[in-house]
Length: 389
Image: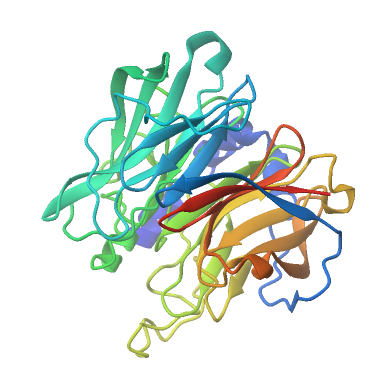
């Protein structure tokens, strides 16, 4: 019943959402998939230098660049930190962050500036909320004023609340119409719910900045379906980026043991978890006998063994000219960043493993306004690293 419900919502609603994503260009090349690719290691394709900008962060998770040249950095343990334009970490965390559930993978996650930040000074944060027996992913917005948050508003809370401390998703991508897509996880012990469109577990959702549901969402107004759902069939999506030149929305998600995925997100699509996967359970048992099934959207590419993708950027800076247009995916388990070569917004099949010499779990990768790449290391004394030519 779920698959019929899902497919029946396509058509006009899907075309309307395409306009929000930047038009029909999102579909261009959508059928081109490169599921298996060899990654190059060794001498990098472009020379670089890695500079330590800041250290002493407690398991940093995400960063956002401020218009004045400073940065905001989230620490998974619940603190929002300010780095000045001069590259100094302000000693005192930003005040006013709401209570955060911290346990296992749970904590303070993504940070993003409102598209109209210059006018309204608002930011968006994602965090785990609740208790060990009942918690969820929550999206909030707040006004940033003199190193404190004011007018904190809850924009979205994933339902139902679940137990445990794993698989929250929690990444944000704004679309050209200023709506946003938020990635979510399946809660680890509740993977079957990723195929249930009446709840948010194992999905991505699209909402307006005030939390309202865009009327052109693929399931808006459909009985028995959570109207915020944009896509479903996900395990734990911790990376998402909107490709502005070719109007594509890419995400990367953790598989179980193997089967990490890069996906091209299209409204109303089902990405298969857990009924189809290239990964196996941590015990070695099969999650599903199926790698793919009719009606399910295959991954653009997958990684086995797992690299644990956790952040992503599309590079259009001027520092690394040969890498312009490529995707960069930070990898916790591989302790690297994967460069995925792109042509016209589509992977070519070439991958490159970068920054393994750092021997660090890399939580996030971003393109800075100066054209440098910025990395966050996932460690007790985490660092902000700046990669230049």
